[in-house]
Image 1: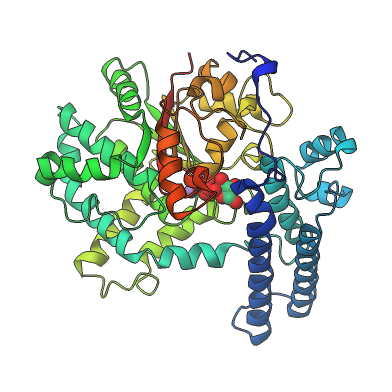
Image 2 (image 1 turned 90 degrees about the vertical axis):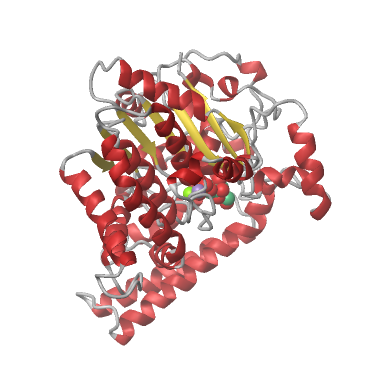
Length: 479
Ligand SMILES: O=P(O)(O)OC[C@@]1(O)O[C@H](CO)[C@@H](O)[C@@H]1O
Ligand SMILES: [Mg+2]
Ligand SMILES: [Mn+2]
């Protein structure tokens, strides 16, 4: 594993016991809420089965198993609140889920008495989601049940405004994209690339003021530039131009199909925004193939599983889910068009979605390297090596890219991502900042934002990087 950093200067990871960090706040406050929500949503599902609203094959068994799961989740929450030592996964849990790496991690630290509030944040948070998943995976009638599905769906449903606005923009831009397949207006395409990168980046935000009613001329006009400037001011590291150059070069000296992979983050509106970026890239002929990498189990509450892409497409076509009137209204037609676009991309194998267990284990992405041969690190490195560019979405992926370590905030990106800086993968991290780890800042930026955030959040100035209000776009050429 070649890396520009020697072991001695690689800092510790963020620990849940470091007082005053977002990390310790997450462990001591937010996880208990997430678990309580899981208990409540399991209870709701049990009630819906009891009332017959949800039809099941074997009602008595399903109810019996559902209550067992609910009680296990309540016990897990108590463990968390009582800060007990983290236990290994049991043989029966190992039989249903690929979790040996977690047990190896705990065995190697037996002496440290790893507890919920005394653990590496990255490991402990993922461990929590795997513990939750085991309870469902071990109950025959609940193995396919996604405890986070109702939250995923209600959040997406609430994004109606942003969903419709983007679908209409897509429909209006489509003819221009198709004109650019043969003779490309590279300046125009670069402007659109930046817009759709920012749409994917801010995926969680639905108030996409950037594009709602901007015509193409607006985007190219001073006004458009002002709108872009406004949103760009929140992007404190911006390597978009380097990613664009990669795509242009891959087009100009085409040695084979141009492929972009997305290591996905959240389902719902963020996935929808990622599909918009993919649609732009495919319809302009800038790329031939897009591969989405999702999760194999429910994870981090809202992360994308393969079934969530199918559900998203059904939601777009469902006039009850998105009430846009009859199928002939402009809004309905725009949603239908986009849903059919995605369906056709999948049929033509221009878009595919996969889910490898590597993305839901606790290994950071320094293991996305030929040297990691035990838990699919080498396998995923080989898979991603086929891509011209690999886009990592969201905050947890950023934490795995940087090892979730307590780096100085001016640490160069290529230092923080270790082996990934030199093992051949061309990568782009699109991250809304929602955790303590923060690197690649120019001198003075952190101090300025800490002071700004401190004003309304006394004693928590450094939590600006956990607020979701700023973002970073970080590129590495892998050389
Ligand atoms: O990856 P996302 O969806 O952008 O953010 C998820 C996230 O911010 O939520 C958790 C806080 O509990 C963090 O572990 C993780 O980074
Ligand atoms: Mg997420
Ligand atoms: Mn996210």
